[in-house]
Image 1 (cartoon, rainbow, N blue to C red):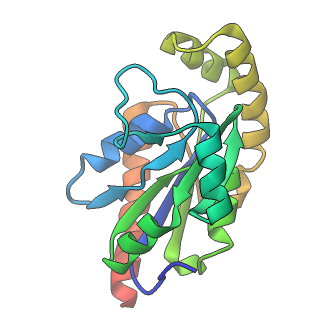
Image 2: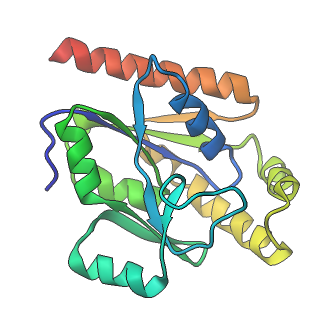
Length: 198
């Protein structure tokens, strides 16, 4: 069990294409929030511009399964045919230092993390698209996925959206600047409450 005496875990989940990564990247630029990103391990191939150790730690499926067997991960899940996991040790270190750590993980991982920490240690936020048709438009405009992958992501999105009620807050990303403001406000309020309760 990770050290839960200090720090805050901020879970951000969303269907693929809803804008989660862009929102999290913008949050990390806000020095006033002082957030730290938890870098996940994944078996998926790097996308153009991604750097090992920055966006993700990239590994083979065999290596990932070895880490699962060793109990390395706080949470892990298979998403769109690839595996993703969060290092338990890295989270423990961050919390012990009182950091506010962002976990950019799917709803399955979020459920696992929530089961291992007290509610006051976690803020969970779900980012939803305005509609599935808009989500499809965004996925196509990225130009990164084949038709088969886009179809699979859209099918998975319906399942993911059905779990939004498990989160503390749901924020619609219709207009990026508005969604970012709403996301920042939710996090600021939670940080403020945490400080007052100390």
